[in-house]
Image: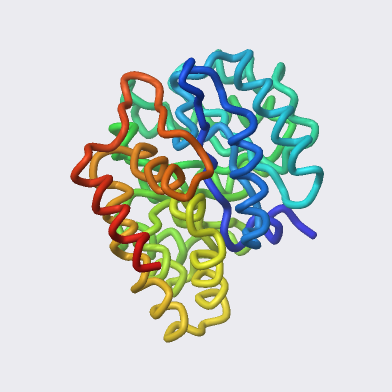
Length: 294
């Protein structure tokens, strides 16, 4: 099975649970991994921004990688997030992290620096040259401050064999449709917006890397599978039931929202690392109310 086929459907952007001592809670991480795999998601994404990687140390990241590989034990593919705004630092991580068991690398476009489109292209060209695994681009201008244009995405897709797809989270439906119209046939395009996944798959995307699937793996995964089979009425019924959850998850901060859901589901304790803080009580109370009707 090709890497593009392996990464169709629902991938879960895993959270990183913490203890009251501000340490990674590996017991809770194991519970989340088992729960989402039991919910029949197609693959996992570890060390993404939902996992609060900007506040994890490299030793913690490596420990989490090895724990995740061992816990997953080959049940589903594992994609590893390695992105950032220092190209040389990424090259170091790509050549020093334990990536033998990874299916692919998800790499967010550089943030804060706001490089030109040529800078973005050269950044990805350099990291692709050293990466031991296929690379998925990640376009999320709301976090990075710079949109990857359609022209840049297509240039990377056509020029560099080791770049096999993109997680597209610009929220710009016109841009998404242009990518889908003009991309190479084997270039994988998945959604990075839970709330837009249904219409984006209808336009031709082949899945989603989801935050919501941490808390609702089966329901969200079934919605995506219905979409991929073009059963849009069934997909819409499931999606309608999740729309309030999407709003609550992203009302203040990701991953504060999804961590509140997982806390109420007794999977984790509600701790984040500064500068992120737990969800405010009014929104958390709305989450309790929402879950009480599920």
